[in-house]
Length: 160
Image (tube, rainbow, N blue to C red; front, top):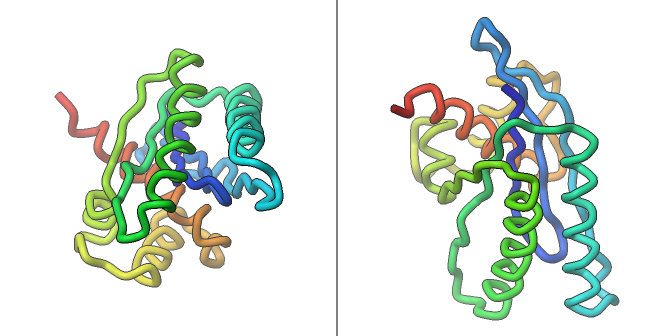
């Protein structure tokens, strides 16, 4: 099973593709970020994000996907921008016919580290360990996306 995890953002969207092997081990297929220039208008950035997510889907053909739920912070402008990015990402995924799951940051932390209030360093170390990587995936948004994919694959194992 190939899962795509996405950590949405307007400036930087992280993505991670993880395959669950027959023996239950997890294998990294690809990870990285989609960046949009701050100098571009909001609509142009959303179009770029949409197109790059579609290209990822066409290149890798994931069987399942998960997106981080919007975490509302004190900065309303940032929350709105992330919400718009999430909408574009969800549209691209839905148009591909994929069933979409969503997880809060605390659900991802709980699933990956066993502690819902884990810090970023703990998360990154666990992603590295679970995926048998030599080093922590960079940038942070890509590591977060891999954690979302791990959460989704592990959650699917126990779904009824």
